[in-house]
Structures are given as structure tokens and as C-alpha cells.
Length: 136
Image (tube, rainbow, N blue to C red):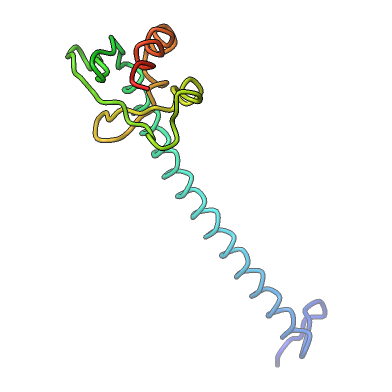
């Protein structure tokens, strides 16, 4: 003889309860997958950020020495090198030159970086402005 429980739902109510439990299990699995994916994405973003910070620190150690004959003289890890300034010749005029000067770029380690990120840019800014102004 089969015993019937007085507390468990029977018939249609039992089917409804099973569907609700299944729906809750699926929602929990989906939430877990979402959390796992977010953790993975955050980890990747953290790696990218640390790589960029290390790169900017490396760029920050490059020193500006002088500006001679249209070339910027810089010190990269103990070596003195010449680099050309990269800027938009169309949009840079004698009038707006002083405002656009910090956005001028040079090529370092295969990429273009603003000269305002270099080590002693603020100290030499006035001197460089005066020397570069002759180009315009």
C-alpha cells in the first residue's frame, strides 16, 4: 500500500511546484555563469590596465634633452636619440601653436606618445616652445 503525505502537493500542484523549482535552478545556473564571466572579464581588464601602467611608466622615464634643427633630442635608457615631432600641420598655426604644443607626439617603442608624458616636459616647456616657434 502506498502512503500519501499530507504536506506534499499532489496532482497539478505537484507539476507546478516542479516547474518553479526547475526555473529557480536554471536562474541560479545562469547567475553563476554570469558571475564567472564577469570575473573573467575583470581579470582580463586588470591585466590590460597593469600592462598600460607599466608602459606609461616606461615612457615617463624618457627625458627630453633639447630641440635642435627640427629634431627632439631625447634620452632613452641612457642612449641619446633624435626623434621628429608628429603633429597636424593643417590644424597647427602660429596662433594656436602654444595650446596644441602638449599634444605633439613622438614615436617611442613602436607607438606614438604625447610629449607631455615625458619626464622633464614641464621644466623645458618654455624653452621648447621658444625653439619650436621658429618652425612656424
